Image 1 (tube, rainbow, N blue to C red):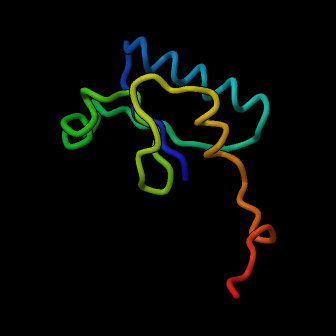
Image 2: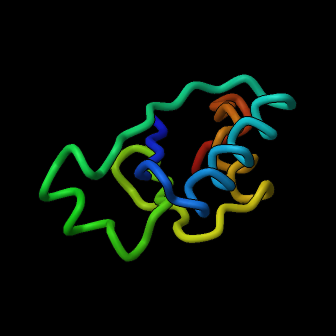
Length: 86
C-alpha cells in the first residue's frame, strides 16, 4: 500500500500530488492520501517532512517527490524474475 501524507495549503504537497498524478499517467497504481492535520501523532511526526510518501509502512521519500522514485516504487513486482538460491 502506498500512502501520501500531506496537509492543505502546502505548496510542496500540491507539487508532490501533481507528480503522483503524472506517474499515474504512465503506470496504474492506487494510493491513499492522509491529511496529517487530522491526527495529532501524524502531525507531530511528519510536519517538518511533508509531503511524505510511504510504501508498506516504510518511508520512501519526503520533501520534494520526484518522478523516478515514484515510478520505481509503483512498479509491480514480478516474482517470476526472481532467481532461486542454489
